[in-house]
Image (spheres, rainbow, N blue to C red):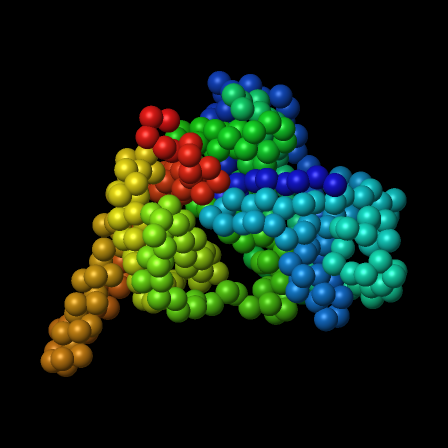
Length: 352
């Protein structure tokens, strides 16, 4: 059993591999490899693995087979940590009986029966180029995955950069990610979806997460500013991640992002963390929501059609601002800082 800790980003450039080579020119690169990966994902008829927040796949790497179970863990804003169990296979047929009982969400006496009832749901094919990189705090593996998730005749393109911790402190992947982001050579965006999640949705076996109303005032119910900041950012992540499933977004998603961002700004300011976290530059990218709300109220009171037209214009302009914000290197660095703060607030204490 291993523990997987990784940061995941979507990449937009045409030839990202060459760009990563250039970024790592002055880094200590231990190795570089390229492989063809074919992953087949399985579950029971009633989706017991998905419902237990586990994932199961059989992978072929250049013709060598391995099966993997990933258990539920913590995830958010592109950072994911979960337990991973890997077992070699002589052929591509899944066999849950080869895993230790703690890897599976079934009673031990049921594992053989469940294993026989597994069916293939979807697959993914990617070309993976990996760089093993040594940094100050440990060793990270940068993986570039280019390919697609497939279900029947449906496909969902994969263009991802993952930074996974191989040894050392978690700081190592943040250090490596910052080097990539600060280069300004790649256009990245945090990716909250796993390949398995995308496959279940593509196969029609799961629906994309939906917006859920939550009173922003409830974030301020704690006496502790750290709790307010933590709760507001958790809410922000949950809402912002909806844009991965629905790139067009909706007004209620942007409004919830704006409200949470304002709470984050206020709490970070009171904790004297605004400068360290770098939140301030992104308020204007969402402040258009306030102007839209004023026009909504005016339109409701007067029925003035010019208000309606201007509301539509502001919404379209706002979508473009948010889209640009999510690919801004400073925004990515802010997200990395927030992830670090969530893990260890004391590391950002005054004087640190």
